[in-house]
Length: 148
Image 1 (cartoon, rainbow, N blue to C red):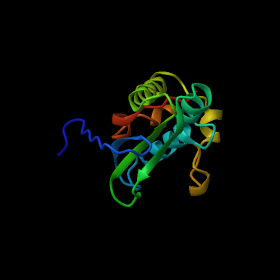
Image 2 (cartoon, one colour):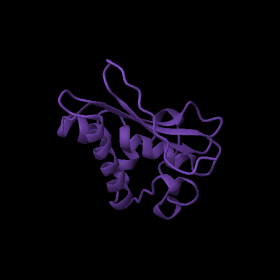
Image 3 (cartoon, one colour):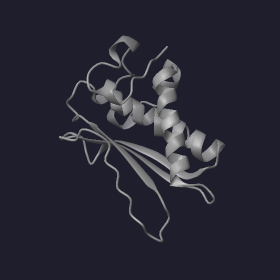
Image 4 (tube, rainbow, N blue to C red):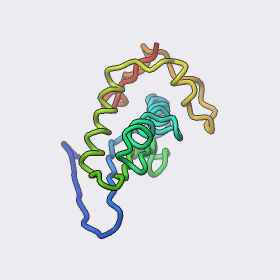
Protein backbone atom coordinates (compact mmCIF):
# COMPACT_ATOMS: atom_id res chain seq x y z
CA UNK A 1 0.00 0.00 0.00
CA UNK A 2 1.35 3.40 -1.01
CA UNK A 3 1.46 5.82 1.92
CA UNK A 4 2.78 8.94 0.22
CA UNK A 5 3.97 10.63 -2.92
CA UNK A 6 5.97 8.63 -5.43
CA UNK A 7 8.13 10.65 -7.82
CA UNK A 8 10.04 9.46 -10.89
CA UNK A 9 12.26 11.63 -13.12
CA UNK A 10 13.51 10.49 -16.50
CA UNK A 11 16.24 12.48 -18.24
CA UNK A 12 15.82 12.69 -21.98
CA UNK A 13 16.63 15.13 -24.79
CA UNK A 14 12.94 15.02 -25.76
CA UNK A 15 10.30 17.64 -24.90
CA UNK A 16 9.88 17.72 -21.11
CA UNK A 17 6.48 16.89 -19.68
CA UNK A 18 4.95 15.98 -16.35
CA UNK A 19 2.27 13.51 -15.36
CA UNK A 20 0.61 13.78 -11.95
CA UNK A 21 -1.54 10.85 -10.85
CA UNK A 22 -4.04 10.24 -8.05
CA UNK A 23 -5.51 6.84 -7.23
CA UNK A 24 -9.22 6.52 -7.89
CA UNK A 25 -11.92 3.84 -7.59
CA UNK A 26 -13.46 1.88 -10.47
CA UNK A 27 -16.43 2.95 -12.59
CA UNK A 28 -19.07 1.27 -10.42
CA UNK A 29 -17.99 3.18 -7.29
CA UNK A 30 -20.47 5.77 -6.01
CA UNK A 31 -17.85 8.51 -6.56
CA UNK A 32 -17.21 7.70 -10.24
CA UNK A 33 -19.35 10.58 -11.53
CA UNK A 34 -17.44 13.04 -9.32
CA UNK A 35 -14.20 12.13 -11.12
CA UNK A 36 -15.89 12.41 -14.53
CA UNK A 37 -17.25 15.88 -13.77
CA UNK A 38 -13.91 17.03 -12.31
CA UNK A 39 -12.09 15.76 -15.38
CA UNK A 40 -14.35 17.77 -17.65
CA UNK A 41 -14.15 20.93 -15.52
CA UNK A 42 -10.37 20.71 -15.32
CA UNK A 43 -9.60 19.61 -18.87
CA UNK A 44 -12.73 19.80 -21.01
CA UNK A 45 -11.33 20.73 -24.42
CA UNK A 46 -10.36 24.42 -24.68
CA UNK A 47 -12.66 25.60 -21.90
CA UNK A 48 -11.22 23.50 -19.08
CA UNK A 49 -9.51 25.29 -16.21
CA UNK A 50 -6.09 23.79 -17.01
CA UNK A 51 -6.13 24.85 -20.66
CA UNK A 52 -7.54 28.32 -20.11
CA UNK A 53 -5.17 29.15 -17.26
CA UNK A 54 -1.89 27.48 -18.27
CA UNK A 55 -2.05 27.45 -22.08
CA UNK A 56 -4.28 30.33 -23.17
CA UNK A 57 -3.84 32.93 -20.42
CA UNK A 58 -0.40 32.43 -18.84
CA UNK A 59 1.14 30.74 -21.90
CA UNK A 60 3.42 28.66 -19.67
CA UNK A 61 2.28 25.35 -21.18
CA UNK A 62 1.94 24.01 -24.70
CA UNK A 63 -0.60 21.47 -23.46
CA UNK A 64 -2.43 20.75 -20.23
CA UNK A 65 -4.87 17.87 -19.96
CA UNK A 66 -6.44 15.39 -17.56
CA UNK A 67 -7.66 11.81 -17.88
CA UNK A 68 -10.27 10.83 -15.30
CA UNK A 69 -9.96 7.04 -15.64
CA UNK A 70 -6.56 5.82 -16.75
CA UNK A 71 -6.10 3.15 -18.07
CA UNK A 72 -9.84 2.46 -17.98
CA UNK A 73 -12.73 2.35 -15.55
CA UNK A 74 -13.27 -1.39 -15.07
CA UNK A 75 -10.73 -1.59 -12.22
CA UNK A 76 -9.42 1.01 -9.77
CA UNK A 77 -6.98 3.21 -11.63
CA UNK A 78 -5.58 6.72 -11.82
CA UNK A 79 -6.76 10.27 -12.36
CA UNK A 80 -3.95 11.79 -14.46
CA UNK A 81 -2.82 15.31 -15.23
CA UNK A 82 -0.47 15.91 -18.20
CA UNK A 83 1.54 19.13 -18.47
CA UNK A 84 3.86 20.12 -21.33
CA UNK A 85 5.85 23.31 -20.60
CA UNK A 86 6.13 26.04 -23.20
CA UNK A 87 9.56 27.24 -24.35
CA UNK A 88 11.27 29.18 -21.56
CA UNK A 89 9.10 27.61 -18.84
CA UNK A 90 9.79 24.65 -16.60
CA UNK A 91 8.03 21.50 -15.53
CA UNK A 92 8.24 22.77 -11.93
CA UNK A 93 6.49 26.04 -12.85
CA UNK A 94 3.70 24.10 -14.58
CA UNK A 95 3.38 21.72 -11.62
CA UNK A 96 3.07 24.63 -9.17
CA UNK A 97 0.37 26.27 -11.29
CA UNK A 98 -1.51 22.97 -11.70
CA UNK A 99 -1.63 22.50 -7.91
CA UNK A 100 -2.85 26.10 -7.55
CA UNK A 101 -5.75 25.33 -9.92
CA UNK A 102 -6.58 22.19 -7.92
CA UNK A 103 -6.53 24.17 -4.66
CA UNK A 104 -8.70 26.89 -6.22
CA UNK A 105 -11.22 24.26 -7.31
CA UNK A 106 -11.29 22.86 -3.76
CA UNK A 107 -12.05 26.27 -2.20
CA UNK A 108 -14.07 28.18 -4.80
CA UNK A 109 -17.51 27.34 -6.06
CA UNK A 110 -18.18 26.11 -9.58
CA UNK A 111 -21.45 27.31 -11.06
CA UNK A 112 -24.00 24.67 -12.04
CA UNK A 113 -24.05 26.14 -15.53
CA UNK A 114 -20.28 25.72 -15.93
CA UNK A 115 -20.36 22.21 -14.50
CA UNK A 116 -23.32 21.24 -16.71
CA UNK A 117 -21.48 22.35 -19.86
CA UNK A 118 -18.56 20.15 -18.84
CA UNK A 119 -20.43 16.94 -18.09
CA UNK A 120 -19.33 13.82 -19.92
CA UNK A 121 -21.48 14.04 -23.07
CA UNK A 122 -20.33 10.70 -24.41
CA UNK A 123 -21.42 8.68 -21.39
CA UNK A 124 -24.93 10.11 -21.24
CA UNK A 125 -24.45 10.77 -17.53
CA UNK A 126 -26.88 13.02 -15.78
CA UNK A 127 -25.88 16.48 -14.59
CA UNK A 128 -23.50 16.61 -11.62
CA UNK A 129 -25.00 15.66 -8.28
CA UNK A 130 -26.15 18.44 -5.95
CA UNK A 131 -23.61 20.04 -3.62
CA UNK A 132 -24.57 17.98 -0.60
CA UNK A 133 -23.77 14.76 -2.49
CA UNK A 134 -20.37 15.85 -3.77
CA UNK A 135 -17.33 15.45 -1.60
CA UNK A 136 -18.35 12.23 0.17
CA UNK A 137 -16.43 8.99 0.03
CA UNK A 138 -13.06 8.46 -1.63
CA UNK A 139 -13.65 11.17 -4.24
CA UNK A 140 -13.30 13.71 -1.46
CA UNK A 141 -9.73 12.51 -0.85
CA UNK A 142 -8.89 13.85 -4.30
CA UNK A 143 -11.03 16.97 -4.67
CA UNK A 144 -14.31 18.25 -3.36
CA UNK A 145 -16.26 20.39 -5.79
CA UNK A 146 -19.04 22.70 -4.66
CA UNK A 147 -21.81 23.75 -7.04
CA UNK A 148 -24.05 26.76 -6.64
